[in-house]
Length: 81
Image (cartoon, rainbow, N blue to C red):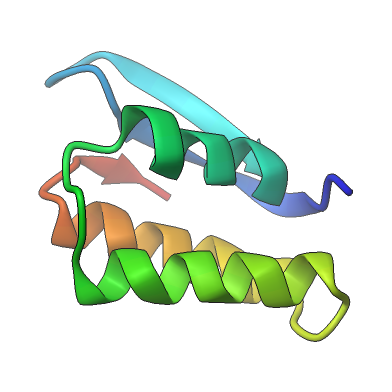
């Protein structure tokens, strides 16, 4: 079920300067569900749809990575992609 990304996404999830690297679609899914500062938003919704498509083999892990970065930017989270 886990889909690895070619390059992890490092972001300040727990506050400025507190970085964490996300390396798989499964890990990113949990972050969006458990740790995300927004409850909803167009990029968040899109990321969740893309993640599901990746897990079903219909989209590439890179598509999920890019959607995750877009969702982080929407949420105002600092990203070191």
